[in-house]
Length: 491
Ligand code: AMP
Ligand code: MG
Image (cartoon, rainbow, N blue to C red; front, side):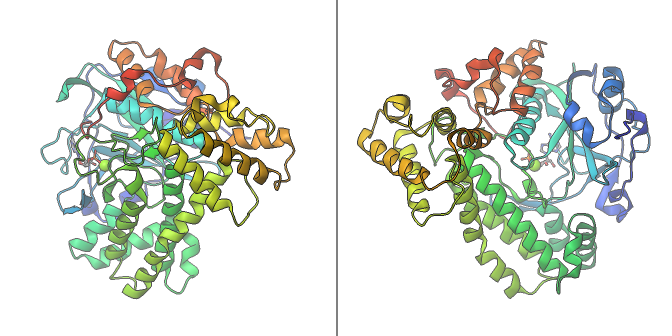
């Protein structure tokens, strides 16, 4: 039986705080003026063995609004650097947050608690170290949405609002978010030690990561190469999820890449409404470096940056050989994810062609891919017809007809009975994703002091394949005004 703890009694063991002192700066969060609780996620509390029933809002505000240190925590800002928009920036950064410490739960899992928006640190440069309500709500909701879809992600325990204001898109209210993840180490942590020529410390960081995250790599001929290989495989799998579900990260700088292969550091992210591969989520990204279709290549480039930083520990040719396998790793994963969305679990030589044709139709038709897959998840194979999918098949009707016939043929090669097939489809095809306009509505209400929509969206995003009748409208096509939403790096 799980014994639950209270906030002042969490089982901390702060291993990062035992690393060299100049890797971080110790310091307390700067209290937020009139901090108040907006939302708390009991599912995430479980990771920490934290009893949701005893997590009183006042106590959450006291500890996560920066008013009092959590007993046994050891707050610190983590120094890292990284490549931003293709250029190395030696002056980054700390994620404008503090690692409060690591909690070990009864299953032996170690979870980082990271308070985002905690105020200035030695690494803030000219920034205020704050995060605004708008971007914090977006991160809070998307963390749950990604988890609900089974896409690796950081999570969030709670979200706090305040009456403190800072200048972003005009004056905006500040917020704090308690991010929970098994890892806050980024590609940029390795780059920092590599480019500042501290190769002994680079080895120390790699050893720390192997001990903590990848203990099996210890037995390999070169544990550092083995660690790199696992990171690459996890990252290939992650980007395959993004491409299969239409997720655009928006700012794929190397400091936003987790060595655990989780989606990390949410900024101007987007789920595609219409399937437009060249969609750019971030208005500041003029050249479209981080456009949707470029994500696999950019992630590959980011992995090359990590590989470069590991050169003092691994032979160049070994890293290069590994990097060469990235695209094929990614493509295998992507095909598998896309096939799963069609309920195709067996392998057939024509599968890749069938999938390519479908995504070609999506592009031609600017299809709402989420709604398309949700629609076919409600149909038996008998019912798969142009007539039942009119919303999606109005243009290039003949091509759709041909594709549907091929698909129906292909389904006959699967073993599953109709009810099982429908279950399989539904289990990977959400009714709900966090569309920008949904987050926008929640933000507008929250800015007026009404947090109900944030809290109503949370369980819907947690169980996105289920029907939630009170928020049925979010299964429908987005309103026209959604197209005008403009996202930037400003957060
Ligand atoms: P981002 O593009 O949001 O990932 O920002 C990159 C990094 O710049 C963050 O991780 C922080 O280290 C730093 N940064 C950005 N905005 C601020 C801010 N307002 N205050 C302090 N640091 C910031
Ligand atoms: Mg970042």
